[in-house]
Amino acid sequence: MKTHPLVAGLTLALASTLCLTGCGTSHQEKSGAGPSSAAASASSGYPATVMSCAEKLTFTEAPKRVLLLEDTDAPTLSMLDLLDKVTMRTGKIDTTGYDVNTATKLMSLPEMKSGTTTLGGGASVATESILDAHIDLVIGYDRGVDRKALAKAGVKVYAPDAYCYDKKPVDHADFSLVTQEVTKTAAIFGVPKRAITLNKALKKQAADLPKHAGGKGASAAALWLSSDGSSMYSYGRSSMVQAIFDVNGLKNAYADNRTRVFDISMEDLLKRNPDWILLLSGSSNADTIKTTFEHAKGASQLTAVKKGHVITMPYSLTDPASPLSIEGATELAKLIAS
Image (cartoon, rainbow, N blue to C red):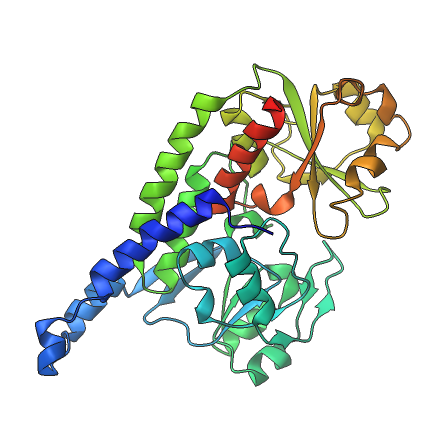
C-alpha cells in the first residue's frame, strides 16, 4: 500500500485551501463574535439538494452520524477531508489501491453487523440496526438497506449514480462523472468550496492524461473474475473503464454495451479478441488473478495472452467514479507502456 502521487498532490492543494479559509484567526473570533447565521448558511451552501437515484434529498445541516456500506465513496470522502465525519462502516472493506491514510481510517471505523444481499453480494443491513445506532445518513446502495423504511424514520440514503439500478446509465462515461460525484458529496456535508478546489485539480489532471496516451487505437477489455475464476464480468461504455480507456487511446471491446457491468463468457471474449486485457483485482486475488485467467479454458487462444498483453490493476482505481479513477488512467498508461 502506498500514497499515490495524485492523492498526495490533491491533498496538499486541498489542505492549502482549508488553511486559507480556516487557519487564521478572524476579528470576529478574537472578539468572541461569530459569523451571522446567514453568512454561515451561504458558506455551507445549505440548504443543499442532491439526487440519490430517483429520490431528491435536501440537507439543511451536515449529517451527524454516517454509516458507510462497505467503502462506498470512500476515496471521494477522503480527498474532501470528510472521512472523519463517518461514524460507522459495515460489510467487507477492500483497501487495495487506497493510500495508507484512507485505508487506515476506514479500517479503524467501528463496524456494524451486516448480512449479504441476494443480488450483487454486497452488505445488507437491518433497519433496526441502523436506527439503534442513531444513524442519520447511509452512504451506500439501495439493495443493502430498506430505503422506504429508513425514509419514514427520517434517515436519508445517498447512493452514487453508479449504484442506481432504477436510473438509466450515461451513454458514454467521462471524467465529468468524477467531478459531479465530488460536488454532490461536498454539498451533503456543507463544504462546497472544498469541491471547487478539488475539482479544479482533478480537471487539470484529467486534461493532461491524453498527452501520454499509448494505446494507439488498440482494443481492450477490463475484466473482473470471481476468486475461483468460474465467473467473469466486463464493463460497458457507462463505466469509468470507458473513460480510462479513451484517454489512453484504447477502444473498449464492450463499448457496444451501455450497461455498467455485466457477466460474459470466454466464448464471447474470444469472438471480440481484444489486443489488451486489463484484470481488475482485489485483496483476495491480487496475486493470483493473472494466473487464474491465463489458465482458464480457451484463454490461451486470445491475442492478448499470446502477446503478453494481460495486465492487472486494483479495481478501486477504475469504477465507480471517484478521484482514483484518474489515478487509474495514469497507472494504465504506465502498464501499457512497459
